[in-house]
Length: 637
Ligand code: WT7
Image (cartoon, rainbow, N blue to C red; front, top):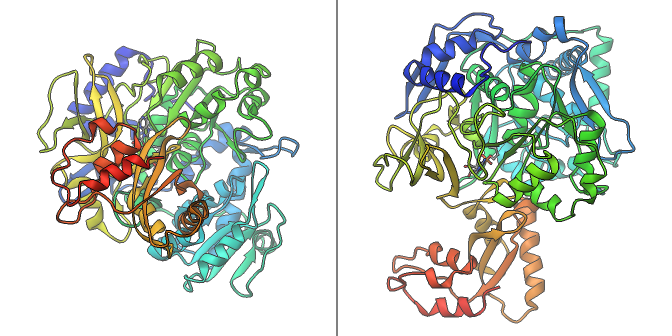
């Protein structure tokens, strides 16, 4: 593979950026020319942010899996596409070449077809980080089914909500998943979810942990049996379904400031072009490099930079089933040593957690293969940046701080490794095609440098969100209505003297806990389901490892019982309703919440208390009962 669109110097970056802003259509048409199309586009871009309606490469026909698989068979057929490292270092790893992967995707695509799945159907995947998850995702794309991967840490209720929203009739899961020394009974969680989803007619179950599961006749099928069936039928390759550029590729649910998680929809052509383009440029991928992204495929990072971006670029992508701290805190470093990894793309929360184990686990392994380091998910603090730079990169690996979102599909603001300069805690500069703008509360553009504001983007890039599944209006109001004519990110941002961007965090009621997005309203709803709870308010506070922790203020009905037991109960409830990732770190029982006369909870005040900044609480005169503040302050945890 060669990448004619790969930018190799700061001057080339400047030129590409200039071209992409003055002639976006020309710029992206040239990039798109190096992909495999069944039919070329009629127009490069049609767009209207007010409705919103965005069409990239309209009229083109393609299948993303032909770009990720078929086009590599000639020159890269025997090259590893996926290296899979199991949870347990004692278990054998797997190397799947492009040829193997093509074969396996075809096989499973035929299984899906055999089970009645066709173009446009939604298929939900709830699996651990096993190669079959990658295979199943690509098999869906092969036949034009819309995949919706649900992270393995979500609860039965969260799964049911997503299945209902997507109206998915097919679910693919595993008997269980390994995570460190734990086993997660995935199939049994699915069984609980499906009680609320009678429309699900097929559940395909992969054997992983050999945990006993119950299989419902007519509904539940073993993955291995289904593969054998298509083999016996003698069906081999599965021709790729020809897709329209704007046909949906997948749905991925993500939290917002209100209501239930929304299904972010990405479409085929633009997503393919942009994830590949950004992968090649930000990480400066060179043929033969081994790329290790530590995310889970249940999140957008895994979709874009474990699967689609790397595979479309013909890269070798490393997929790791386990966790950074098991069997010991040297697991990442051992994997890097074992496979001679060239690029490590990980999250600040993982770095901070590994920092706490000292340098012993780092020094036990040879990290000299590393060329590039990447960070994603939350602002990387200076201390973590320096630690990564010095101890992992040994002072000579550029660090890319990549800012983006589920909705943006790919990286929008980042330095390019070794090409444009890095600066600790700065995502730095926009990629070509990305036109950031800072606005004030009223939507007025904030011009000049050394300024802060709300981060918006002015012009569509190819992998921008197309809709929120089943509710286009929600997409409009969430992202395109706050500041008419602009895509609103929900992030606050500072632009320095030289035009470098530094993301300062969410400006809405969304938390970022260990790089995972969690809506405060969602956690409150879960807490309120506990029978003893009258009402609650949830805010974030700075947390050494997680970035943000979850602080819950709870008005509780039965004040007699043991407070700690009640806390445990509430935490259990949140785990059951959302999943363990949303568990509050701190719960403070209060007799009342600070509210305005109209009944609105003043979160600003609660945030200041949780952040331990009581002096900046500010004006409380509009409160219905200012005395609640004193009580809350007195009992702060
Ligand atoms: C939010 C998006 C994009 C993949 C992972 C998270 C925060 C993400 C950075 C960064 C500062 C970052 C933002 C953003 N964020 N990357 N490099 N620096 N903040 O995806 O769950 O959609 O969350 O994560 O607040 O809005 P997500």
